[in-house]
Image 1: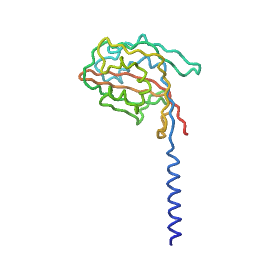
Image 2: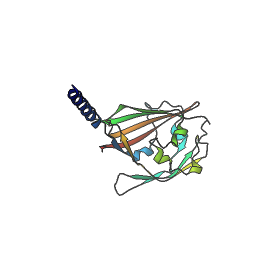
Image 3: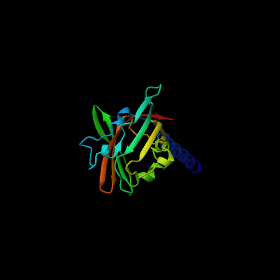
Image 4: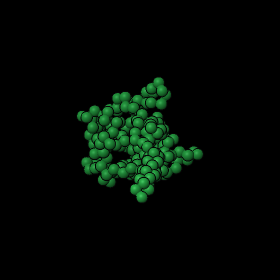
Length: 197
C-alpha cells in the first residue's frame, strides 16, 4: 500500500512538473516604430475633446537609427502647450495587433488611475524610458511651457519572464488620457518579438 502511495505521488509530481514546463517565462523584445512620432489617433479611436497636438508639441523630436537598422534613438524636446489640471491623470491603453491588413483588438489592456505616479514605478513597462528624463524636468502633471528633453532615448525594450501570449508582430497602443474635463488620445506603434528561455 505504501508503494502504491509512493508511485501515486511520483506520478502526480511529474504531472505538475509537465504542466509547469509550459509556463516558462517568455522574453518580449519591443521596438517602438518610427511612425510613433505621428501620435494622432484616428477619428474612430479618439474619445477625447482635446487633440493631443494641442497639448504636446513633438515637432523638434527626431531619431537616429543604430547599425542594427531597428533600434532608434530619440532626441529633442517635447513642449507642453496647455496647462493640464493639477489632479491625477487617468490612463487607459487598448492594444491592437495587425493581422491581414486590419487592426484586431487583443485581450491586452492597461488602466492606471494615476499616470504620474506610475511613471516612476520600476515595475512598469515604460520605466526604462522615463527614467532617462532628467529629474529636474520630471514634472507631472505638466504645466504650460514645460519642456521634456530626450537625449538618446531608445525605442528598444526587453520585458523578461512574462507569461507566453500570442502578441508578437505589429502592435498598436491606443492611449486615452483623462485629467478633469480634459480628454485626449495618442497612438503608438510597436513591433514585438517573443522568445522562450
